[in-house]
Image (tube, rainbow, N blue to C red; front, side):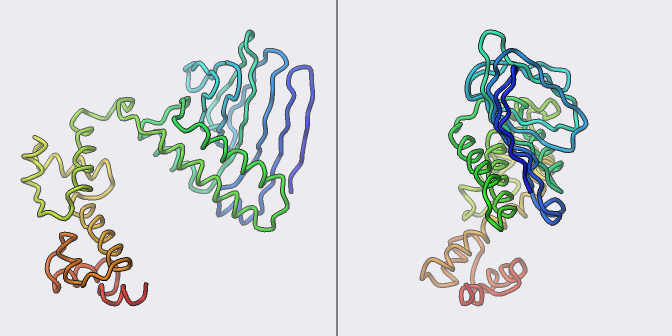
Length: 288
């Protein structure tokens, strides 16, 4: 159920939808709570705290400020905001350049973990996206879904909010903002990029240590802290993923694929592939 409200007042002109998701959506999915747009008619401040919600909004026109976690951030045309509304926040339009905003409040059973990851990666409360049209398009689709009558719209809203979070994660990568990330921890980023490009080669910790001028034991520990898995596990995942692509979309023999992906000759490749996928590569090819 949703409540539509085209609200005109001396302060703002707004068009919002108060959305009530199903119990299933609330318990299991990313779900919408409110979505709308407003145009300020005069300067005003909006303050909230202790809301079980996460807020995204985009400044379509005008200027203002956001206050969040004791800091004040300037907002301008095409600024975007992503904050945890359990914490106190406020935003105010500029007296000289009144703004137009598009916003949505949303939540989900695992969203707190996603937000923590956003912050861990260096995600900022305020940012100017490279792809502002992507954010605008997702917001518009969410608004259309919330105002529609599709009988599976909670599932579609979940999908759309997933797209929004993906865009936010793309914008979040600012390791220079993470105060507790030492310089050597930042150095694992090029290590991962090198593994992605050279997975087919024989790779040892000693080689990586020499190439990137980092102690191999320290590199192993920091890589796992940063990416959640060991270098060997990450490299194996890249190789298996590439092998699956070749098994499905080429006519190369299983042995050729194992060698091409850095997984060795047929016997070893088959054994390792089965350990990961639960079936030998020939069976995977047959099924998929």
